[in-house]
Amino acid sequence: MEFARLAISIPPTHQPGEIEWPPVRFVDPARHFALTSADTMPDIEALIQAARAAAAQSDEETVLFVHGYNNNFAEAAYRHAQIAWDYEMRGPQIHFAWPSAGDPLEYAYDRDSVLIARDALATLLTALLKEDGLKVSLVGHSMGCHLIMETLRQIALSGRRDTLDNLASIALISPDIDLDLFRSQIRALGEPPQPFIVAVARNDRLLLLSSGISGGAEKLGSVEDLDQLDELGVSTIDMTGLGNRGGNHFLPGTSPAAIALIKGLRDIEPIPSNSLSVGPVSITLGN
Image (cartoon, rainbow, N blue to C red; front, side, top):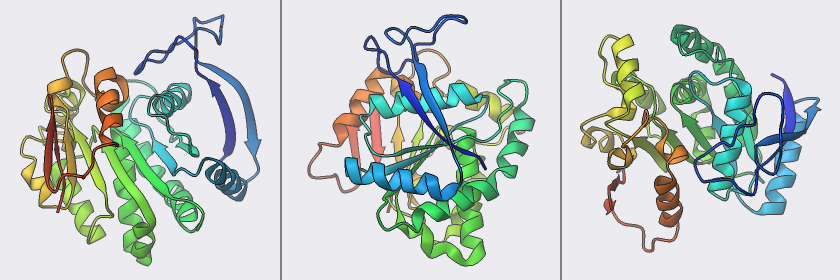
């Protein structure tokens, strides 16, 4: 693993859900996302010290984000910055960059890269969870959710299952995981850490393609019967009703309506006991 601190500026004209990409040869921070500084860190301890300092300053949880399939480093880092800004997350943001090919035709390459990256993510996550001053939320998108689940399974099977109870939350967005595989991964965890949230969309067109590549296996991120996830102790956010254009593969990150709705849910009191519907979005809490 290699470590660095990146400073990414967000333009004042930024629109929720968008990444204002610069043209190839000219970057204007007033109009575009821009990398304003990048400093390497010598080791994982330096990363943890920086996270601890940022957490103390913001008094907010640390977010460890794992990107999905077909994302090069710049795309994934900018997407994480956009999400953190749009959701007003002011705590430490740690971006785990696994080596995606960044090519839509290299699906198998990315699946292998996810498996290679398990040890590194397990090392990082375990180190973060040992820190008393950090509350860590784990967030993944698409194939990155597969990496998260394989890593959690690996930690549990290595005899360190109790470490995972220190997680503040787990959120899997449009997870590209075969449903049967997910059941196996959950069984390895015993009881999943809570809260454990899965954001799904039954009209996720990219997961439909992924399912075809996988022989028609049902994907967790586009599951039809949500009751079976409730039985596993998993809470769900069904955003099918918000998907009306594009691939519908990252609605919580790219849909302004979804971003506004999820931010608004923070203020709901009391928390519903089992389910809640807000417009086209249905939320079901696990057992």
